[in-house]
Length: 481
Ligand SMILES: Cc1ncc(COP(=O)(O)O)c(C=O)c1O
Image (cartoon, rainbow, N blue to C red):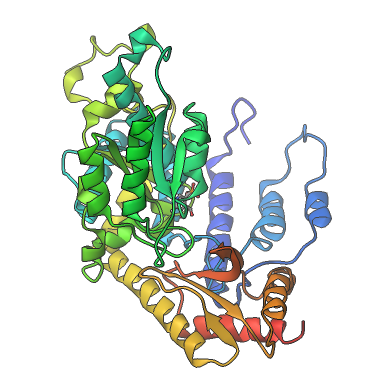
């Protein structure tokens, strides 16, 4: 180690890289046997890391070995075949390499001249994204941390464009009636969080009832907008779902866009989970109206199989993003740069002033695999979900509780139980029991207030055999409860 910097000698660094390569390869060699969850108590995991601030460095190869045993070997099995909880995709190998390379050159994607290639790559990835989902090619956009932040960013633009109409910059909020925002009861809680952060307050978030298919009831929505108008509120934004987290329900985006237009409201779509499935010919029709959205939230660490974290916000044009975020500062001035007007400055279009080059992993992986292959994996996830539903319907000890166009199935294990109370009790006990078992990782949710198991299949490595293994494991653990 060179004591004047933090760098290792070239030879030392090569050894470290070789060890790292073998650790990564090892992950893939052992995929088939990777458990959904590695059972270690909280106290134990805390103990592994319980040490004072290290003042002296440790041998790097020994340190990597420590990382192997304490972190990699105990990691939740997102890569493997047995993860069904939440919305966890398995990442992809090319993006792993991209992250290593991007952090090596350590670019700050916030000003063009700080990261020329990475900025142009991010612009290109925004363009490609519009192609993937058939959105306006002129859209502006930015890579963000995930779906929650993409929704917050889209709704921030919605609010600020609305504020512009009211000239809030000069008038302030004094005398302004509450402005209201609408979404279905199935909408992700990041919309509630965004509404809170934006100072709108959840009292002004109207959660509209859904129909039997768990999509928003647009008649109730329009009636609520009219009631609010009659009561002096200012309806300003509708949030549509392009795939809900619970069941993958896709709202009628065409009708929502028409209602938004009729009442001069912003139309934002949460496509964090399902937005990219609109690229499938088999589902295209379901997403009609997506192209009318004023802003869209997408999540690339879901159905673009990117490693955490990366989401994407799209807005109809760059100008609206700049209106929302641009703030002059002497230390950021661009006038003296070469051809400043041609250079897109991400800091002027988004909140952060330091941003990593997230788009690089999308660029590298989409070029490596080709979008057709990625799209085929999305279709495979959906086909495997249909396979899971079929196995459940054909069984005598499971019952299917939702049907989805996307890759999420809600169901219950009934075993030999006959009464409703017994079945509810059994399924609630299954969650901790399956976690303690560890072979598969699955969580639950509530549909119309009823507790159900929820399997989300969003991993290009899954197979029919792994789907059958999920049910066999639930059966095995459940029958012993
Ligand atoms: C529909 C929907 N919206 C938003 C989010 C939040 O995304 P993230 O967890 O990336 O913040 C999710 C996550 O599952 C989701 O499914």
